[in-house]
Amino acid sequence: MKPAPKLKKLIKVRELLKERLKETKHTAAELAEVAEVPTEYIESILSGKRRAPLPARTDIYEKVTRFLGLGRTDLADCAKFERTGKAVDEGPPEPEIRRMLLDLCEPETARKLERKGKKDDEQLIDLIARVLDVVQGSARRVLDDQIALRIASARNGVSYMDTRIKVLEFLDATPATLTDADFMNFVRPRISLWDVDFETGVLRVVLRATESPENNRRRPLTRTGRMRLAG
Image (cartoon, rainbow, N blue to C red; front, side):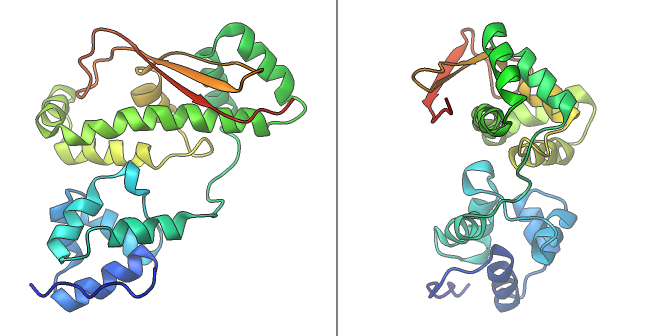
């Protein structure tokens, strides 16, 4: 296969994929097979109905890059370019999701956040987004263990493809789009407790050992990160 020419400028992921599919005479169905996703998933990216996933939240770019003979970072660079500065699906979570996420927070901190949230939701939304980012980082590793993923699929009585798509959909979720199913399948099984120090701005997320296919840890892990907090 003739390698794709070096990108002269960053373009949308769907444009890059369309161009390369035409040049290589491959189809969306063939691309979907290589990426291990349904054809509808690829078609939705090509049509613009689905936003290009962030490189750190998917494994399809590596597979697609090899298949289409693209530059090593072409898709990742275009995805970052496409997503930068776009307020897509930003906003508060649904009230029930918000309540469940606060139930996982240290109780006194949760009460303070509730009081602050009555005046301004921005701080709480930012915190929830950061907590979600930690969970998504943990869930991303599920995609790297194909055997465990297949075992989990068989145990749950669903197809391997259905399980992969469920993970990929969660990895692209935001606080505003997070669903009850996302919370039950990914968030609650992974978070033991989260907390934030209002003085230092340090966010602390304690991950629990779970039954998820990628996680056989016996001890919980703690992830911390500094953030800017309103007074």
